[in-house]
Image (cartoon, rainbow, N blue to C red):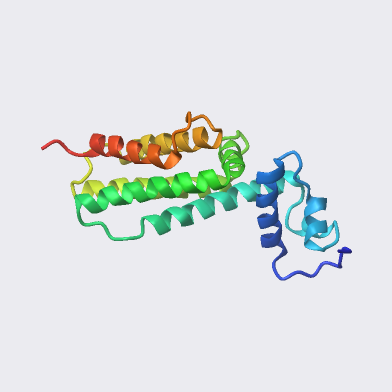
Length: 201
C-alpha cells in the first residue's frame, strides 16, 4: 500500500497495537517506526507526531502495557469481597490474570519492567507501574479488613505475591517448568500462598 498523507483516526493507538504485535514476533531490535508507518499506510514522517524516536515508542509501549495490565487485574478483582472464600477467589483470579497477561506477551512484559526500573524511567511510566501494584495491595488490604488475611504490611505481602506469580510467568514463557503446565503451577502456588496468608485460629 503506498504511503498516504498524514490523516488517521487514531494513529497513535494503531501504531501502539502494531508495535506490540511486532514486539512479540520480531523482538525489540526489529521494531521500526518507518516499518510501522508503512504498514499503517501513512508517510514515514507521520509517527513522529506521536513518538519522537524509537525510545519514545518503547516508553509508550511499556506505559500502555502497564495500563492494560491494570485493566486486566481490575476486571479479575472487581467483585465485592465479604468472606474468606471470596478473598481467596480474588487472590486466585488476580494470579491467573497476571500470569495470563504475562504469557500472552512475554517480550512486552520484559520491556515494561526493564524500562520501569531503568535509572531514567519516565514519571508517567513509574506511575502506571505503581498503579498495577496498588491493585495487588488493595486485594491484600481488603482481605485483611475482613480478617481473611493475616496482619502485616500489605505492600510487603503484595510484593511477595507479585514475585511469586511473575516468577511463574517468566519461567513458563521461557519453557523452564520441566513440562509442568503453568496453570497447574499457579493453582499450587495459590494454595501454598493462601495457607501462609490465613490467620492462625
